[in-house]
Length: 390
Image (cartoon, rainbow, N blue to C red):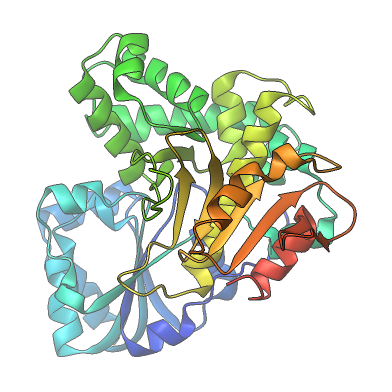
């Protein structure tokens, strides 16, 4: 299987200090380390059960192995650090006593947080790896239907049989991330919850409705959503509530992290062009790209919400607001109508954003009489990753 060069670059960060690198399973952290990270002196793979058992029996073995190799500087990788959270105490000591910078990878921060683990007190930064993004696949001339079918987890995107591989991916997540870690009492109920959550992708969260649909308590549903966030399978987009002329909803919207996984959970052979789901997949794809761009390339100010959405009580909606200044609506239309611009126009009346953009399937970019930009989706992604949007 070919390797796709990734956008992620944390070499400068690692020159300064150690880093956590989190990302969902199979997003390519291990391949990226092997192919692109220079200066790695040693690597601990905590998926190796024999090594895990040895370190559990004797945590001091961790530092002893590095001393045996004569390593007191450079980069040391610890894969799947959440498997042995107590090792962070050993890492902390080595950061203080040597010139080693650690790269600590993982697919979940849940166990680290739950166990009140030492997160190195600012001695390590935190970065995230996402599924494949536009600059990494654009040379393949990839179209929406293909992205919606395979998703953008590298092994699925490159697979000869993405349906079977996506099924295996979901089962691996359920069996190893959920059941093996004892995160839920009833795996069948959680599996049903995953399917219902996928149905609500790109929608405002309604815990009561999901509770009734799955047949578990509201508190259980809320805790299960938190599991999805902690294991990086999903993310929230909060509401933008600063409008004054039109009162806005305050509930967040829910998105899953990969389109192929969503399709698998929904049981679709394909996402039909023109269907409601096609529009939801398109919106989700744009959310994924914007979120990844912010994660890889942008450092938002602390008082700014990097990505949010706006929906007024009276029914106007804008899919995304970036950095609280760029309003973005997504439509799969090939020729926009006044209806497609209603939300952007309503928000524009508030005078809070600097740009208003409709991302769509039209062939040519243009600007309407009232200053709303119409941008084809590929051009929008080019401009986003070139730093021309934010």
